[in-house]
Image (cartoon, rainbow, N blue to C red; front, side, top):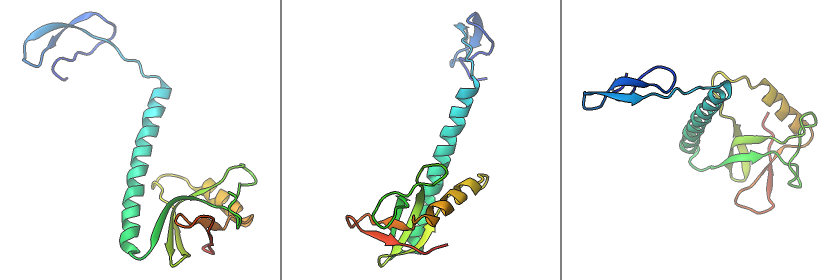
Length: 151
């Protein structure tokens, strides 16, 4: 137990050790965690971990492809730039990283945890590609879309 901290439930005076080592009377307060608090804490941890994985992958892609442009979080639009929606979910799909060399998409990269099941995500992307979501919008050229043929 940490100095100055007691355990217990309720708000009753308890004896505790102060950081100086002397015994003091202190009020304790119990914190109740409900399931949604725990879920939120797990979601925040997953987001932090995912961001760290993405940052590491971005640096790795830059090192592996020094002459390439690495674009983050690009939607899959059609040739006119309209974001293509999945016919089942009605939502679009963003690719984590697009590696572009000389105005050609050389690779599309997804960063995932080792434990995540990506089956539904992969199926959604396949449906979007099937209905013409096979372009990436250039970040450095307004209105310019690059077609890709990566499977």
